[in-house]
Length: 428
Image (cartoon, rainbow, N blue to C red; front, side, top):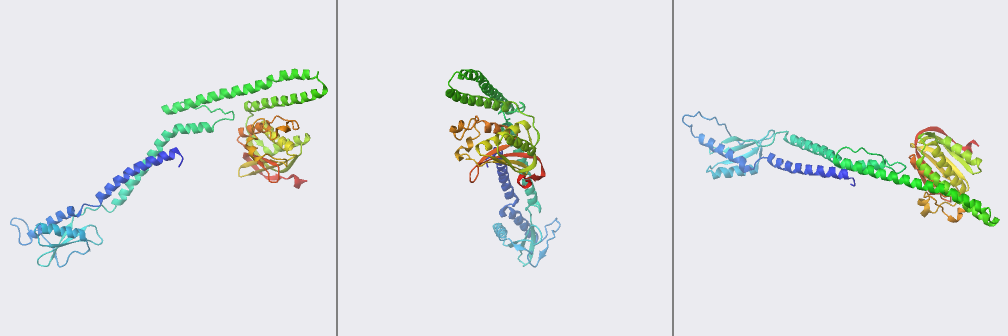
């Protein structure tokens, strides 16, 4: 059990129930009745008085009616109480034998005394046993105490763990920009202190993020001026040297543009709306085909998701370009099931070594740095796509395919899905 709340509840309930168990044990010992010595003492006193009244009447006192029988009282003999009663009678000097029996079908015990004339005098033993429903009352009392202890434990545990819940809720509400949502600074002293500390942390994070974005944007923008001057100077170089310099400057220009776009994706966010994902994919595929990329639609189901249309379009386009460029073509499937929309982009390229899959979304990542000259790009396409997809609650996963190639899988919560599917191979 790793939850602090559950541990506190269990500790409080166990403590209270333990105390109740001790009290119950004491109550049971009391409800079990007194010791035989205590119970039989008044019975022996009663027998002695009755025996003294049997020979003759006491002058001035009305004769006490005493019923005598030819046999002892029916029932089950209680050996322990019988032995104790006989010991008390013999200690008091009465040469009488008694038998204590438990009546069948009714509560309590009876003491039968064998008189010298062979008749039996039957005396009721005082009943100190609990009432018929005593155990039910005791069980109900214990149940109420346990329920009350649980309720009290739940309440005070909730009070004690509320700052931790606030911290957990604040962390789950961290936006795509890494900033915490502001929290109300009210409640108990601990609550106010926790909220104040989280709000201060949020303000510092926001300042740091804005500073970082300004730095990247400024660096990318300021690179343009020296790069322009370098382009002018390159014109005075020999043709062979000029081509190499221009290639390097083009690559620097792409890196600067990609860095600025990455910052803009974090700052400029589209309004969230319902996007028909299958229509968006069709439009991007048509665009890719017009640019000469090898893109094939395998299966396309009608499904809608909640996202920013422009940002999601940019992310899917980046992933398609990545598959078509590095994987010699891209096959696309869009399916919907169990409330999820799943977009798969597969290729037949070399894939990514398993040890580098986790680094594929890092900025400026390349599987083979030597391919920088042969394949244009700054290595920010996947980083930008991941930033956009996760901003709208989706996930993107990279997996190597059996037999070669890479599979890029995007998963979103589906807002609605419609029956029917588009199968390009079948329609052709």
